[in-house]
Length: 456
Image (cartoon, rainbow, N blue to C red; front, side, top):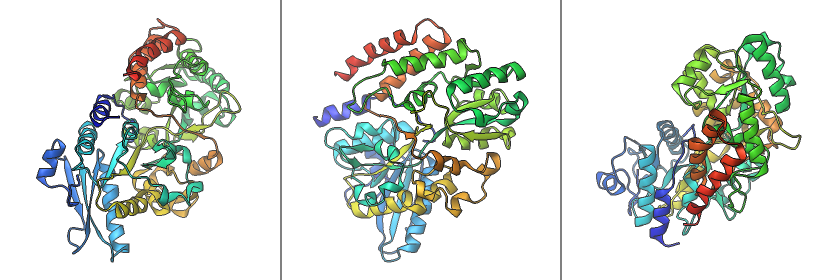
């Protein structure tokens, strides 16, 4: 693909926010004013670690999340303590989400001013894996340890057998149950194994308490995890559009039935779980459960304090015995750009910060994220008392160890944002809220809208 078309394709792609989610110039220096201007604007925040160490190699890191910057700053301090003969000076810059990704596109297109390391949000990542890939493969860092990772998470940032992104979390999707409501309704959550069980329990909850069993998001979170756990997706492994396949149609019908047929759910206040309306609703006991990834634990702690000690976490129920009991959703991959003049050092530092055992432990202890390396889940550091165990049950990682072979991933392509936009804008509204289309009609119409964009 010609570079101009490559850049146009990437800038033109839609984006979605997943939760959660300094530019290097030719001499490896980062964060100076000229570089910021060339890349399309000043950083909102800049932090430098190791500038007091003579002879430290300069590395730059771009991110859109302040917490990610702090995570790498801490890693740089530890690196310098443990590698006195090979110190680094890390310049970490935080940009607005859209600006950072566009800065990166422009830097890679122009051939200069890209950082050594960069966070790339999951929906943007496929756009950097087309044409002449300008990210460095990370295989040599982890090829001897792949068995210790949930590889479905690594696969999201992969192309042709090469891994280009270091995950920030597993993002295991689970059910959060409000035990105060479940106990009042006389429901044992450990008896819920299938979605049929879940519906039956929901009917019992509604009858006993008048509280809905759950809410259904009006965006892609109200469909994608439920599709993916069955091994289906919006694109297949060959990146062919499969949005309107039978599994997806049946799953969308089920989500609609939760609201309109079984009447055990309502559309999420604020339309999605990352909204002030939802936080207030849930905090006051508005629903008996919700389906979200484990990284949503931080939202409970920050936004729903009145639920502390009331919530317990369980795997997803299944539609069929062959279904996975969790799906890895959302996420940011950290990459090393090919413009780095210190590729090997940047890769070694990235492994140290995010892919090593210690790095994965810190993903939990510092950020509250479920690490993608399963071999750390039963370590003392992970199992030690924490605010998350106080808020939820203390066997979260025992649960993950039990289902670690049942993790489904999702297929991300450069046209995934187009699908998600259709789901958010038309599909969920027409099928669930308005009931003006059947699932089959809505999904087929969306395919007709998306295919011309794929052919451009």
